[in-house]
Image (cartoon, rainbow, N blue to C red):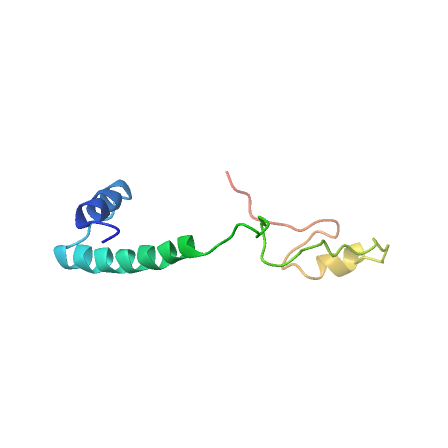
Length: 94
């Protein structure tokens, strides 16, 4: 067994999780299964594998900046429920 019920209980307490006895037993079994599966990774020979941060090589897909026309003031104000011709009008919040 990779993890004990007492360890699961302690972690639950630290996380402020209140688990019933049935939940503790279930969680212990599930976490033990997960940890056993992860332990299988230790069996792999990774001596020749270069450390990476991603599984695939990533590069940023930047595009060139393009100047485009934006909305006119009247078009932008038309999208709001209330305006005074110059700006959106919103309720005062104090």
